[in-house]
Image (cartoon, rainbow, N blue to C red; front, top):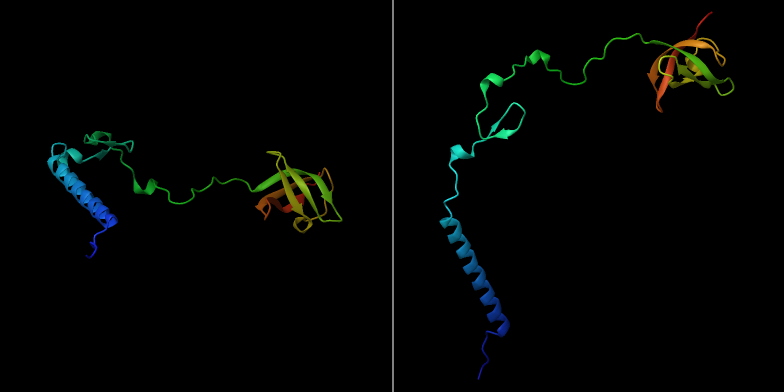
Length: 149
């Protein structure tokens, strides 16, 4: 007599598939029957108030702020104009190496200066005027001129 082609494992797999189908059909029926908590379209609409928060109430038009398109600044705002000439004192300078540092009089910031930016040679404690520039490692002094006493 021939053995049945359905083994125990195949029967178990078929039972699992049937159970999944039945559970899926029950969940589908459950979703169809739960129509009580479905909201109408008007109940689902949300509004944005003047602070950017979502609210179910319509915003008050009297609180609306008028903005001129000319007042909107895109990009970096313009900096206030100031005198680019700064004053400072040479705190360190090495003639052999050709560089030194200047301390800014206004904010006590140390700024690197190279000999190529000097109008004339300077010494330690000399008062100078300069323009501040940007170098690869930080601020640098440009167009350095010694103040004549």
